[in-house]
Length: 137
Image 1 (cartoon, rainbow, N blue to C red):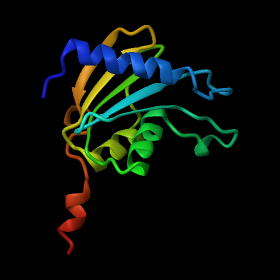
Image 2 (spheres, helix red, strand yellow):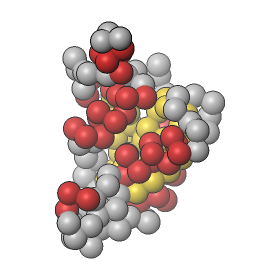
Image 3 (cartoon, one colour):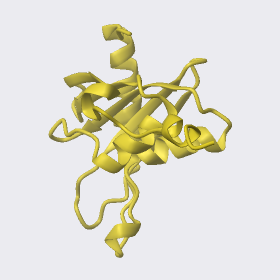
Image 4 (spheres, helix red, strand yellow):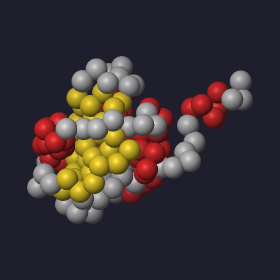
């Protein structure tokens, strides 16, 4: 699946807006994400830190959890913005994998530039997913 530059721009712009809501008093590392579902529905999210660091939540997971809580499980594309074009952490990659092992992942900068566009398979090769558990039934 390819993603047009126009769609990349639209999703990155929404991720930039979401990053403005980040709660990052400890790392000062704002992240915004924008998820497009297969039906075109859009969800956004930001990272939320906590004094107990392990209880913090990444922007990507916030966004996907919002989508699922609204009944959307067919995730297609996610755009993520950070100040340095950072890539999703392993926990976020695994959550993405739960919903679409072929998801497109756009990693960009907070100023709107694209760093890289990946498939989730490139970011999480040889992954474990729901079908592995179905084999046990």
